[in-house]
Length: 267
Image 1 (cartoon, rainbow, N blue to C red):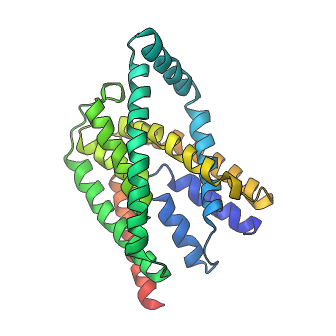
Image 2 (image 1 turned 90 degrees about the vertical axis):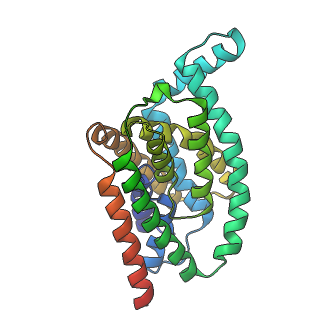
């Protein structure tokens, strides 16, 4: 992994981690498209460290409020929206993590080691989830705000992450936003809740892989690039979703999936 590759992949990670278009899918496809060879899993996780830091900085006040609220709810029995959301995130992350491990083992058997087979799975996942995102977003109502998400809704949204963790191309943010919209959560709230859910599961992945990090120039540049681009992406996506829809992202997913299939056939 050289510096130029690290910058390109950092930009890709920063853009696609929060948009509902699949960061894992793009990080697998770009080295294949550019014939760089497979990217090490540890570098993939390192790039996620950058976007995790973006989440921590952008929502810093929210995280402090959630932690304090969670503490007061558990120790002082004081009820608050922040305390409720904190424990919803905890309750949803644990089973989602366990299910992710199970589905990951299953996906390894289904996809195998063949790179072309993996690219085909990514393409199909991009297309199918793109269509699903478009249909669900178009039909869903926007009656539920971030602070009014119920425990049941939170658990369903959190559990959906496991599918994305196991199958590249599905998109963690894509499936959580789609499920949230299916449950009539408004678009901006669906995006914010998806972002908050990303932090604990990404942190767990970073802690598991940290021993494999190279800590060289490409590592630091890749992390810094994904951090800066991710920070900007969060800001402008939330602003866009105040009035915009997920239609453009759904169309992009389908077109990108079709491009991968065409390239597979051509190669």
